[in-house]
Length: 177
Image (cartoon, rainbow, N blue to C red; front, top):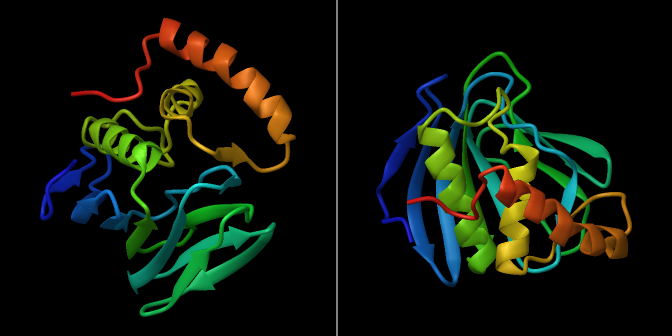
Protein backbone atom coordinates (compact mmCIF):
# COMPACT_ATOMS: atom_id res chain seq x y z
CA UNK A 1 0.00 0.00 0.00
CA UNK A 2 1.16 3.52 -0.77
CA UNK A 3 1.85 5.71 2.26
CA UNK A 4 -0.36 8.70 3.10
CA UNK A 5 1.18 11.96 1.97
CA UNK A 6 3.00 10.42 -0.97
CA UNK A 7 2.66 12.45 -4.16
CA UNK A 8 3.40 11.46 -7.74
CA UNK A 9 3.78 13.63 -10.82
CA UNK A 10 3.33 12.77 -14.48
CA UNK A 11 6.50 14.06 -16.18
CA UNK A 12 4.70 14.39 -19.52
CA UNK A 13 2.17 17.00 -18.43
CA UNK A 14 2.66 17.90 -14.74
CA UNK A 15 -0.54 16.33 -13.43
CA UNK A 16 -0.34 14.90 -9.93
CA UNK A 17 -1.71 12.16 -7.65
CA UNK A 18 -1.50 12.54 -3.86
CA UNK A 19 -2.44 9.71 -1.49
CA UNK A 20 -4.34 10.70 1.66
CA UNK A 21 -5.35 7.26 2.95
CA UNK A 22 -4.84 3.73 1.69
CA UNK A 23 -6.15 1.00 3.97
CA UNK A 24 -8.17 -2.15 3.22
CA UNK A 25 -11.28 -0.15 4.09
CA UNK A 26 -10.66 2.94 1.97
CA UNK A 27 -8.56 4.69 -0.66
CA UNK A 28 -8.60 8.49 -0.57
CA UNK A 29 -6.48 10.52 -2.94
CA UNK A 30 -6.37 13.80 -4.84
CA UNK A 31 -5.81 14.07 -8.54
CA UNK A 32 -4.75 17.20 -10.40
CA UNK A 33 -6.09 16.94 -13.92
CA UNK A 34 -4.48 18.99 -16.63
CA UNK A 35 -6.86 20.33 -19.30
CA UNK A 36 -8.47 17.74 -21.57
CA UNK A 37 -7.32 14.66 -19.62
CA UNK A 38 -8.77 11.78 -17.67
CA UNK A 39 -11.55 10.47 -19.89
CA UNK A 40 -11.91 6.70 -19.55
CA UNK A 41 -14.30 4.30 -21.23
CA UNK A 42 -17.70 3.69 -19.66
CA UNK A 43 -17.62 0.88 -17.09
CA UNK A 44 -19.22 -0.35 -13.88
CA UNK A 45 -18.17 -1.96 -10.62
CA UNK A 46 -19.88 -4.62 -8.56
CA UNK A 47 -17.26 -4.77 -5.80
CA UNK A 48 -16.62 -1.21 -4.58
CA UNK A 49 -18.22 2.23 -4.35
CA UNK A 50 -16.56 5.47 -5.21
CA UNK A 51 -17.18 9.16 -5.18
CA UNK A 52 -15.31 12.31 -6.07
CA UNK A 53 -15.41 15.95 -5.12
CA UNK A 54 -14.09 18.83 -7.20
CA UNK A 55 -11.80 21.04 -5.10
CA UNK A 56 -10.97 23.57 -7.81
CA UNK A 57 -11.69 23.97 -11.49
CA UNK A 58 -14.43 21.91 -13.11
CA UNK A 59 -14.90 18.26 -13.93
CA UNK A 60 -17.33 16.11 -15.82
CA UNK A 61 -18.53 12.55 -15.27
CA UNK A 62 -21.13 10.42 -16.99
CA UNK A 63 -23.76 8.23 -15.39
CA UNK A 64 -25.87 5.87 -17.48
CA UNK A 65 -24.78 7.77 -20.62
CA UNK A 66 -25.72 11.25 -19.36
CA UNK A 67 -23.02 13.88 -18.69
CA UNK A 68 -22.89 15.94 -15.48
CA UNK A 69 -20.56 18.80 -14.58
CA UNK A 70 -19.17 19.53 -11.13
CA UNK A 71 -17.58 22.74 -9.86
CA UNK A 72 -15.71 23.53 -6.63
CA UNK A 73 -17.19 21.87 -3.52
CA UNK A 74 -19.57 19.74 -5.60
CA UNK A 75 -19.44 15.96 -5.38
CA UNK A 76 -20.98 12.84 -6.87
CA UNK A 77 -21.00 9.17 -6.01
CA UNK A 78 -21.54 6.05 -8.07
CA UNK A 79 -23.57 3.15 -6.73
CA UNK A 80 -22.66 -0.46 -7.45
CA UNK A 81 -23.62 -1.63 -10.92
CA UNK A 82 -24.17 1.82 -12.46
CA UNK A 83 -22.52 2.40 -15.84
CA UNK A 84 -20.34 5.51 -15.69
CA UNK A 85 -17.24 7.35 -16.82
CA UNK A 86 -15.12 8.54 -13.91
CA UNK A 87 -14.51 12.23 -13.39
CA UNK A 88 -12.42 13.81 -16.15
CA UNK A 89 -11.41 17.30 -17.27
CA UNK A 90 -12.62 18.34 -20.75
CA UNK A 91 -12.05 22.02 -19.94
CA UNK A 92 -9.23 24.49 -20.63
CA UNK A 93 -8.08 24.93 -17.02
CA UNK A 94 -6.66 22.57 -14.38
CA UNK A 95 -9.05 20.69 -12.12
CA UNK A 96 -8.28 19.26 -8.69
CA UNK A 97 -10.50 16.48 -7.32
CA UNK A 98 -10.65 14.23 -4.27
CA UNK A 99 -11.55 10.56 -4.69
CA UNK A 100 -12.91 8.12 -2.12
CA UNK A 101 -13.13 4.38 -2.96
CA UNK A 102 -14.54 1.83 -0.50
CA UNK A 103 -13.43 -0.79 0.18
CA UNK A 104 -9.87 -0.68 -1.09
CA UNK A 105 -10.05 -4.32 -2.20
CA UNK A 106 -7.31 -6.18 -4.07
CA UNK A 107 -8.47 -4.81 -7.44
CA UNK A 108 -8.59 -1.18 -6.25
CA UNK A 109 -5.19 -1.47 -4.56
CA UNK A 110 -3.54 -3.13 -7.57
CA UNK A 111 -5.21 -0.81 -10.10
CA UNK A 112 -4.19 2.32 -8.18
CA UNK A 113 -0.60 1.22 -7.48
CA UNK A 114 -0.16 0.29 -11.14
CA UNK A 115 -1.73 3.60 -12.19
CA UNK A 116 0.76 5.46 -9.98
CA UNK A 117 3.71 3.43 -11.30
CA UNK A 118 2.81 4.13 -14.94
CA UNK A 119 1.71 7.70 -14.17
CA UNK A 120 5.03 8.83 -12.68
CA UNK A 121 6.92 7.26 -15.58
CA UNK A 122 4.81 9.02 -18.21
CA UNK A 123 3.65 5.65 -19.60
CA UNK A 124 -0.06 6.42 -19.83
CA UNK A 125 -1.72 7.77 -22.96
CA UNK A 126 -2.61 11.43 -23.49
CA UNK A 127 -5.83 10.94 -21.48
CA UNK A 128 -3.77 9.28 -18.71
CA UNK A 129 -5.34 5.88 -19.35
CA UNK A 130 -3.76 2.45 -19.16
CA UNK A 131 -2.90 0.52 -22.29
CA UNK A 132 -5.95 -1.65 -22.99
CA UNK A 133 -4.09 -4.93 -22.52
CA UNK A 134 -2.91 -3.73 -19.08
CA UNK A 135 -6.55 -3.35 -18.12
CA UNK A 136 -7.23 -7.00 -18.86
CA UNK A 137 -4.27 -8.22 -16.80
CA UNK A 138 -5.26 -6.44 -13.57
CA UNK A 139 -8.89 -7.68 -13.25
CA UNK A 140 -7.84 -11.20 -14.16
CA UNK A 141 -5.14 -11.26 -11.47
CA UNK A 142 -7.36 -9.73 -8.79
CA UNK A 143 -10.68 -11.47 -9.57
CA UNK A 144 -12.27 -8.03 -9.96
CA UNK A 145 -15.93 -7.55 -10.59
CA UNK A 146 -15.61 -4.48 -12.80
CA UNK A 147 -16.81 -4.55 -16.39
CA UNK A 148 -17.04 -2.48 -19.52
CA UNK A 149 -20.46 -0.93 -19.96
CA UNK A 150 -22.39 -2.55 -22.78
CA UNK A 151 -21.05 -6.01 -23.62
CA UNK A 152 -22.73 -8.84 -21.68
CA UNK A 153 -20.89 -9.81 -18.49
CA UNK A 154 -20.81 -13.47 -19.57
CA UNK A 155 -18.93 -12.56 -22.75
CA UNK A 156 -16.49 -10.36 -20.85
CA UNK A 157 -15.87 -13.09 -18.27
CA UNK A 158 -15.28 -15.64 -21.03
CA UNK A 159 -12.84 -13.39 -22.93
CA UNK A 160 -10.89 -12.06 -19.94
CA UNK A 161 -8.55 -15.07 -19.47
CA UNK A 162 -7.52 -14.99 -23.13
CA UNK A 163 -7.07 -11.21 -23.28
CA UNK A 164 -5.17 -11.18 -19.99
CA UNK A 165 -2.88 -13.98 -21.21
CA UNK A 166 -2.19 -12.00 -24.37
CA UNK A 167 -1.43 -8.94 -22.23
CA UNK A 168 0.99 -10.95 -20.10
CA UNK A 169 2.71 -12.21 -23.25
CA UNK A 170 3.10 -8.57 -24.33
CA UNK A 171 4.88 -7.84 -21.00
CA UNK A 172 2.07 -6.33 -18.94
CA UNK A 173 1.90 -7.28 -15.29
CA UNK A 174 -0.79 -6.65 -12.70
CA UNK A 175 1.61 -4.57 -10.60
CA UNK A 176 5.11 -3.19 -10.83
CA UNK A 177 7.71 -2.53 -8.16
